[in-house]
Length: 88
Image (cartoon, rainbow, N blue to C red):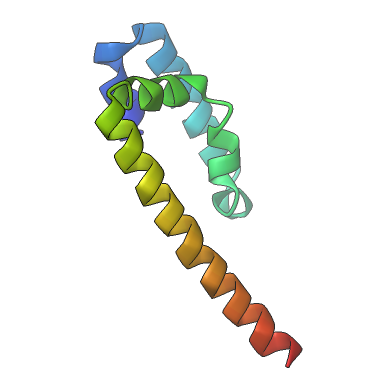
């Protein structure tokens, strides 16, 4: 929600309103949606446009790629440890 409101300055206000409505509508479904809320937010394309605008500089893009690679590595190790413990 904060990113959608922050996007008003960079994007057209109609995109920010669309994103806020889409997020609020998906949150009204209830507890089952919270586990997959990020999947519903992928449809909110203004957030993707805002992230793309933030990484327009080469340094920011590289830093974000390194950060996301580290997060992916940590999540993979956690997933692997869980399944290894379950199988063995």
